[in-house]
Length: 487
Image (cartoon, rainbow, N blue to C red; front, side, top):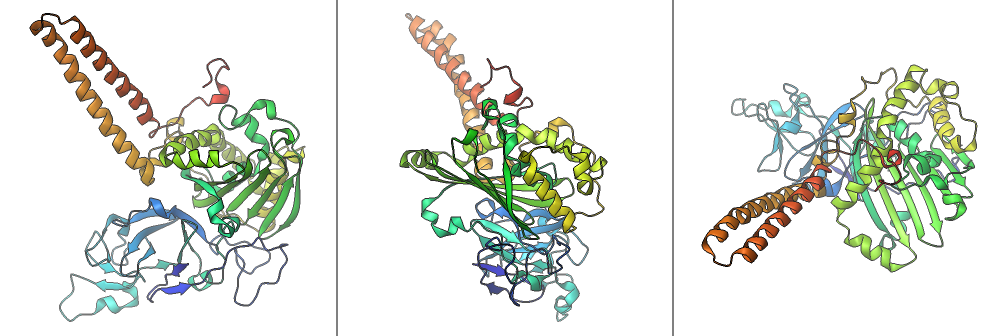
C-alpha cells in the first residue's frame, strides 16, 4: 500500500492493484483506470507511468536524497509526520535552490538550505523565517513546492512524474509472481546508474543470445552458443510477450518466457527441473538522455533447500560486487553502440542501421517497433552527450557504492579493518629488532614477530584489492583474457 502526494493537499491513501500484462493486450480499460502511457492509442507518453527510483532499504530517513527522473530533478525524503516517503521537484519556489542540499528539520519538515523555508509532506509551505510576524505569505499557492505521487511496493519506491490525477488510475508495474507466494522466493537485488539510455538497457537484456559471448567467464560460456529461436506471442501498446521454446544452454534448462511491460520493465521466466524456477527482472528507469538507473532482481525458487540456505548467508554487498562485474561486461560497448545508432538515424531507422537476419534478434526488433509504432521516445529531439572515457564508464563508487546502504557500510568497515591491520603490522615489525636486542634466545620470537607482521601486511594488501572493487570495475572483461589466466 502506498501514498499519493499532491501539491498543496494532504496525502491520500491509494489502493493500487497489481499489474497484469493486459492479459491478452486487448482487455477493456474501465472508466476509473488508465493504461500506462496515456489514452492516446497512437502515442506512449513516458511521463504517464510509474517508475522505481530507489530500493527502500537504501534510503536514509535522516536526510534528503536527490534523483533525476526523465530529466526532472527530484528530492526524496522521509516525512515522519505521515510516516511515508515524499518526493518533490528539487527546487525551492523562493529562489530555486535545490532542496536536496537542505535538511530534515527537528519538526520533520524539509528545510531549504538557502533561506530556511520549510515544507510539509504534501508540498505546502509551513514557514518563511524572513517575513514579519502575522504575515501569511506561506499560504500562497506560489509558496508550495511541486509534489509527485509516490508508492512503496515490493521493496521499491515508485514515483509518478505525470499528471497527479492520473496516478491512482495507472497501475504500478510489478511482477505479480513475487506477491503470490513471497515466502517461496529468494531474491537477490542490485541497482546501478548506467551510462546509456533506458531503451538501450532494455534492448540488451531482451537479447538472450548475447549472454554466452559477452558474459563468457562470468555468467556465460561460449560453448553454449547456438541458434536462438525467439517468438513473439502477444504485442501492443502495453508491451509484448514472447517465448524461447528451447531455452538457454542448448535446451538443457527448459523453455524461457519473456515479458516486456511498457515502458521500462521486463523479465525472463525460466523453470528448470535441475535448479527450480528463476526470474531475471529488470527495471530501466530513465534519468536523462544517455543515462538510466537499472534495478535488477533475481528471484529464485530452488528445487533444493541447500542453495537457498547459502544464498541467504551471502552479504548483499558481496553479491553486488559480482553483479557489477557482470554489468561491466557490456557497459563500454553499449555506451558507444547507442551513439552509432543515433548517428544512423536512431530507432526510426533501426532496421537499416542493424542487420538482424536471425530470430535471435526478434525481441530487439519488437522493442524498436514498439518505440516507432507508439512514438515512444522518452526524450524526443534530445541528443546524446559526448562519450565518456573508459575510466568513468568503469566507475562503481558514484554509480552504485555511494548510494547503496550495504556497500557503503561495508566499504567503511573494510577501510577501518585495513587501517588496524596496517597499525598492528607496523607495531609488530618495530618490536622485532627490540626482541633481538633484549632477548638472549631471540631467534624464534623474532621469526614469529616477522611472520605476524608479514601476515598482517598480506591481509592489508588483500583488503586493498577488495576495497578497490567498490570504486572501479575491471577494464579487461573475462571474455578477453587468455583462457589459462582467466579467473
